[in-house]
Amino acid sequence: MPPFIRRYVRFVDAANRRLGRFIMYFIFVMGGILLWSSISKTFFMPSLWTLEMAQFAMVAYYILGGPYSLQLGSNVRMDLFYGGWSLKTKAWVDAFTIFFLIFFLGVLLYGAVDSTTYALKYGERSYSAWRPYMWPIKVVMCFGIFMMLLQSISEFFKDIARIRGTEI
Image (tube, rainbow, N blue to C red; front, side):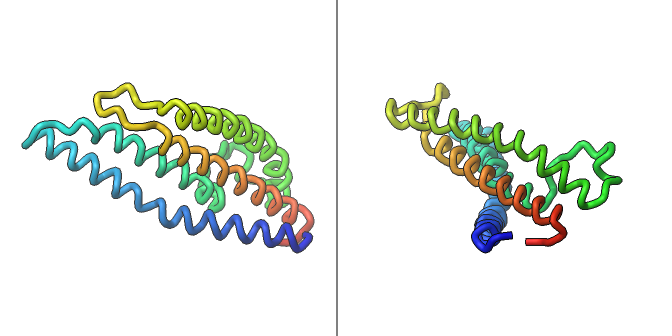
């Protein structure tokens, strides 16, 4: 593989590894928010922000953790036939099917950027009683989708290298 592809794969993998290792602790953030929600509902006046903030933390958790999950190969697959195939056959199938994922992520990113632009331009707020601005979570979603797209391209390059009999 050309050196610029190797550098691209190493850079994207390193960035998503760091991001994924950091974001995996957001499960504790979400747990803390939900714990506070339970305590405040039991002993105090219920908080208006806890449910929606827990949802935002969960979105950040799975959107930003997705590229790391793809990198580790811990994404969900239909393993009916796939598990018995050789590494080269798996690489062929993955190199073909990754185009569907890249197309999907491209459409998703286009819609996410459009929605984020709208939220920033018009000051979009949630319809809940708390009424937070929507742009921060939409920016997180755009960034996470973009990183997933970069990781998908990296996985494609790794599959091509595997097909050629080398590793990156």
